[in-house]
Length: 361
Image (cartoon, rainbow, N blue to C red; front, side):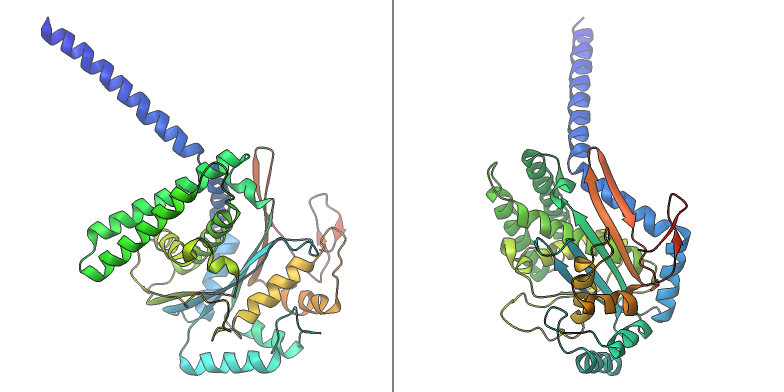
């Protein structure tokens, strides 16, 4: 009889534990639901035959380089622009000679950012089109909704994602050998702990969401491309000067590399990054002009009315972006219960839209 009672008691305990497990699992699945759905859609885009073949063409053009640099620029919350845009530009490092050639040519043909320039030169645009350059831009509308409908849901999403990163780094720390990596991982865990503790119910988490969105988008898309390389040695992320790089205790760079490593399939490679300092012109400023020109143009382009504010943006649309298969533009948005990812085709040629009507975008 005692054994029977014990069995029933254990069954009850087991059912209760199972209930707790599934409750926690459902909570985890709903946490950051919309942001997870967004990346499912992006993954499907990269798995499409057309996109898969395009990546193969790009990598072949880049000689399946083992060293890569990702540049980026953002135009967010500018009331004078119709679009909020995050732009990434992936470029292979093909040796010192090629690096200096590109650096010099960009400086000579387009010495100023698009915001300060009166025009964008044809020589610059033609040169970029000849190089191994892959750009992916995201127009993000109401981007905070990607982390939840309410402030409470967004706090849960942000803290959940940061805790997931912290757990991942904890695993790396346990598997590390030598004091240098262990100390580095310890520092990251402490930094994440501080960030998580600072997030109170009334905390403004706009910077946290922007950092997570930028690093997730950049790392995820870059991984979808580079995981097809047979060998990788070095990957670097070199963003344009922006306050976001130094916000939240400069957590953007560690987050980017954690996300990249997780999505690229565990391939071993060296990470490289600049020291965040918005007061100094970075040594890679010329290379980031590619992202600057693309991002600035897409941010200015009122697609609904098919107009731009200045002629220089029209020059870029026609001379660099239109019909360029290696410059991809997407619209990422949330409405009601749906997360939407749309491909924006910018072309000089008439095309058939979904209603079967001819038009241009």
